[in-house]
Amino acid sequence: MDLAQAVQDAQPHETVKVPAGRYTVNLELSKPVTLLAMGQVVLDGVHSGSVVRITTDGLVRLSGFTLVGGSAPEAGGAICHLGGQLELLDCTLRFNQAPQYGGGGLYVRDGKATVTRCRFEANTGRQGGAILVDGVGELRLEDSTVIQNAAVEGGGVKVKEGAKATLIGCTLADNKVVGDGAAGSAMHLSGTTTRAPTVSLTHCVVSERTEGPACVYNSPKLPAALTITRSLLPAWCQALGGVGNHFGEALFVMSGTEPYLLSEKSPAVGAADVTAFSAASKDVNGRARLRGGTADLGAFAFVAGGSATLPY
Image 1 (cartoon, rainbow, N blue to C red):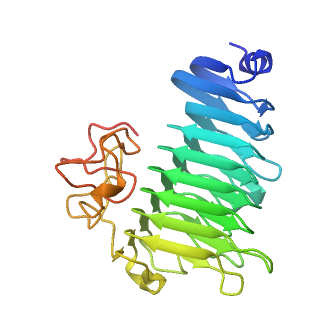
Image 2 (cartoon, rainbow, N blue to C red):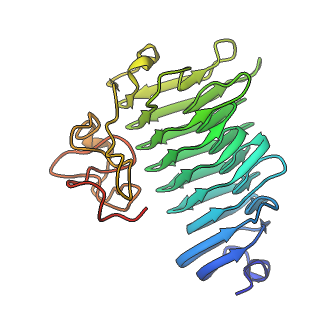
């Protein structure tokens, strides 16, 4: 299948079904369209630009893809979203980069992005190793992992200017910041003199195993409006306050094919408010969130016996 040609030929609002395989692409989506992976589909940017660049004011949907090898000259290594609406479902964004500006995995500028059951792993960018939300962009990140990404500001996520970000049931772990002025291994938040970001985390797990600079950095001079509730954070983050939060180690299994599963001793197990989830709610692996009248914090529902049966 010539994927670029199929996208070019698609009518607005059409669904393009992509057969299993690996595709070398730098797609430009200038009209509303749905891309649906039929099996295991890898989109490889081969380090020659964003894997997917979205310029339409309409709605773009991507479901079931793995995006790798994106290297953006400025922003959005895997996905550069410059307006309109984006729905990203069951995707993995891994080994992408945006070294000059940011958003190694995803860059959202002035558009709206809803990201559900996705994995951001080992992406890099100057701002927001995994995700950069800029301008008046809006991000809703649900049931997703942000793991082992790196940047100067916001190893996992950077939210700046007048942007908004809502994180629900996510796991942010082992992200890092490097270089002069490095801050915010999990998140870096900063506004301007005229506008401030709005950021909320609920039912999330934020974990860094080595104590260091604030893993959630909120600029003291140009701060965001930050709300953290019913989440698990490192012990040294207690100054962040919030309502119903837990502070301590996440106690992941850290073995097998899915190391960031919760162990049975994790304080995240059973710590969620079950009324926050519907009966149909699923974790990042597609497993039911509700279990015997309980639910867990973070992207993973607890699995008895560890991770041996789960693909990574």
